[in-house]
Amino acid sequence: MNQQPHIPPAPLAVRMTASGVTKRFDGRAAIEDVSFSVDAGEFVAVLGPSGAGKTTLFRCLTGLLAPDAGAVRIGGVDIAAVKGRARRRVAVVFQQFNLVSRLTALDNVLAGRLGHVPAWRGLLRRFSRADRLLALECLDRVGLLDKALQRADTLSGGQQQRCAIARALAQRPDLIVADEPVASLDPAASAGVLELLRGIARSEGVGIVCSLHQVPYARAYADRIVGLSHGRLVTDVPAARFDEAAFAALYGAEAGAGKF
Amino acid sequence: MTRAAATASPAERTLDQMDAMRRGFSLRRMRLWLFCALILAFYAVSWNLAGIDLSKLATGLPKLGRWIASAWPPDLTELPLFALRTAETVAMAALGTTFATLLAIPMAILASRNITPWPALYYPVRWFLNALRGIDSFVFALLFVAAVGLGPFAGVLGIALHTWGSMAKFFADHMENVHLGPFDAVRTTGAGRFTTIAYALVPDVLPVMLSTTLFWWEFNVRASTVLGVVGAGGIGQELKNSMDLLDFPRLFTIIAMILVVVMALDQLSGWLRKKLV
Image 1 (spheres, rainbow over the protein chains, first blue to last red):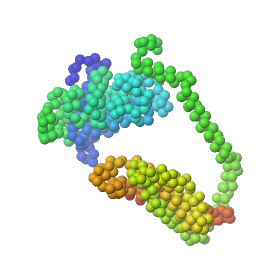
Image 2: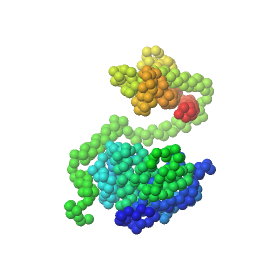
Image 3: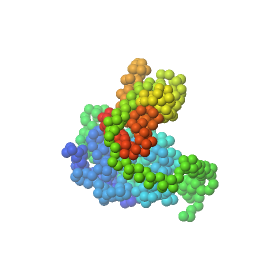
Image 4: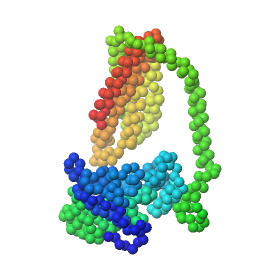
């Protein structure tokens, strides 16, 4: 799909495959027969009105929910079947950042290493030089190296989200799932965060699945847009081909009037 | 890991700086050690002042064991009297707590920086509440026994005063932390300050207040069992009499009675609080 000139560190590969994913709550399907895949280095935006099933889909992608039918395979492994540290293959970026506010930016990023190191290191917060170097490199990657020793709650919203992305990066994941990562940020910080996510997809060869509420952002930053409506995947197109018809199919004809 | 400083990445340079900062003798490390030493000293002094003597515990425990053994079977002949005295205790706690709540609400408004109509009174009110809170109901009861004579009335007054201070402070802290958005919204409609408090704040704060009141009632029942020891009525008085006479079967009955009532109240107030929140 995305054939932009860049040098992927790993050979271009499929990072995530969702096939026929169905999840029911009390017999009512929250998502039904959802199938799509994410390649290495690809930024996929998930759009859809509230209640379309994005949250359920994301919880299935991260392995927090096991689908009733179908499977989510990440790096070839069924993510619902793995437990504990094998979960580190998927990193999550949250709308509310979810940093530990009393820890420094560096300690927050080091949390990304918890799935890699023995438990005692996490309990004592004693990480090896290599891990700390990696964490600092991740902070450098998101432009926060000079804030490494600052407490997380003293960072601005945009900086907190960058720090959370560094945490996801330190996890060395196959897939980063970003759940409305810019919903609580101003436009400048939003653009910065999405730019960063796309850059990371390119340079690290990570697959990124990112839910968004603003269609223009999706069109500007994503390689591909998938649309969820009433729990079903109704759109799966390259971002440039997401047009007024696709918008109307997703959000209803009236909402789309004059948006393009 | 051999590398010239010039070729090190920014991350590596930062890491080296951080490690260098952590090594060696710094003011920060000295402060940390000093702090640890102070804490250790504090506990050492406390240990001495508290007269901790484990050998005394070793000789005392068997004595306690013999007493417990001699308490069986419990003496049930005076059960009606105990029931009356326990009811006295529960009533003392209920009345004391209720008076305290009624007094605490206006004080809490005065002691909330964000909603008080008279900010000048903020600190005096806080000091006053702290003074009430700092003196235990036990001490108040002692004073009131001297002032109004022996009996549960002294206990009620003691409970009311101490709980007044504690509760008002708790309510005020809660109100200072409450989300003021709705408060501001109602105020901008042109409502007066007290109307605004009643309309925007009370629905938010009321369940917490009721639940705290229940909690304090329950707490005061437990606390007021000992008020009898200073002559302020209730089951505590019987408790002290039995202890003075070393009448362990009687003591056993009283303690069992207190336990049953406290547990029942605990359940009741827990259930009520769940209903409220």
